[in-house]
Image 1: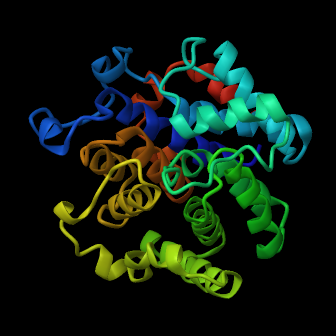
Image 2: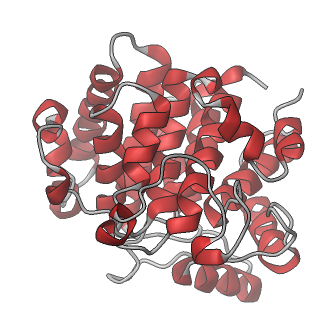
Image 3: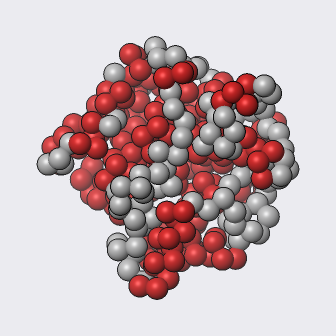
Length: 311
């Protein structure tokens, strides 16, 4: 596979594993013993380098794309079922840390077999479970040189398999535009992210008749200003807007992959997902060579992960 797949997916998995031991801990709790590198046990009592559902679902989507030579929504759901029920695509052959919305959507698909109807769209389903796994879909659309309209339609469908709320769709779509800008643009990471966001906001302003949920992302319209916010103004909960904000803030206030991910993790709460989102975008920009080798060597099932990127 092209290097971009390896760079991005390794970034996601590394961020996920870095945040796993302190997931759900508050910022104040983590400050008593800040994360400075890969460490084990903690929240799920797992060895260092263990990764969670973020990576498992990202890998499931990647495997489906390779198997089907494209995005087949039914097959993606079948891979999610395999992950949930057999533990494939996990570090230790057992699924864990499964999100409520994700679980409900998978169970609904098992009953009805309708991929475009199984995702949850109610007001309580604006969590980050689609954003955390969307990177392979973004890369596929870019690799296929799709128009933005076709790409967004497909990315919304992939995200909506579990999280069908428009607020979640927007996060996935903005990530597509930022991914594209990192891969095709030049200049600093912040300038590329800003360029992607500018395109994303313009697309949604035209495509959406109701801008209520687009406004929720308003702080990201000016990244230079956003970067000036202190950590106290950055939330890192499972709310999809907060997750994207925290990931981008961590990236634009640092100038190296490990610094960005450590900053993301030490924000606390949904540490694995914030770092996974930051890791995917950061991996694309800095490359896999920007990830500390000691972190990569610690990853559970490292050789198997590397095999995913072989032609």
